[in-house]
Length: 390
Picture: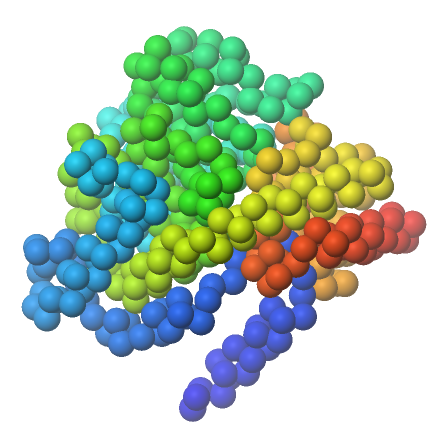
């Protein structure tokens, strides 16, 4: 590379990724094949529009590629193309959620989503997000005692507020979601059910987490977390909503798609369809459960008492160290997590009471439950050392 400044930064980052233990729940490591697709000649092609209806010439192969990605996505999740469509053009999860609301929620309408500090996402209607500026958020919570969803309370809010859309699927919630219960609440309150499966997409694909497709009207998932693909998103929709969603993505919110990313997504979908991916997905959960239990046995409080997924929250403040200090201390020792609020947090998002830990990335690197036991020792030692230093 002639640009030595960028080349040096690439080398530094490659070394950092190699050396650090990556426990960021939103990250993973793509295969060499996915990386090849991302760095391919497809970067050069502008393909504004959809297959068979492009606004530029020279898109014969782009049409074939996009259709291939769509077919693989539907097949991976066992969806009939007569009932479901999938848009593969959304650039990432936040604009994908925005597209769903733009298509299905009227101006001044409402989105019912889990509170951000209880495990929801900014794009579930939080006030600092555009989704909370263009639409009203109706927030729901986890139960204060159990720290899991309270469906009776959720139902009562939905029946009173009558939201246009109920959002299920979260960014920091570690338990199995009862899709059937949420579908019933949506039906009773007259709402659509939108599932944000960004974090659990790979677990669903691997057959180790219940699928939401029999219950949802729309399902959005990012492709770069447990699905182990490039940074992008998929929007699945029942046929009744597909045309509106496609128009919301293009021309509503963006222009030409990133065809190199779509190629990378197609490769990741191919990889997720292989038998070994199910083994990987189960190992991700095994590792998360082992690590959370080991930390709990060392005296750290795990939110809701454990995990059914790839992630969990640790209440570090109860042990005498804030989430920010815990994250900083671990990073200095080469263990990367993120600070995170916990339900009913008394501290601020910039200096919260907890950290979020995920095992998808380290499982990709071949880590086992034995490694998780050793890692729990390391994390506990680092945190306790910094409590003493404070």
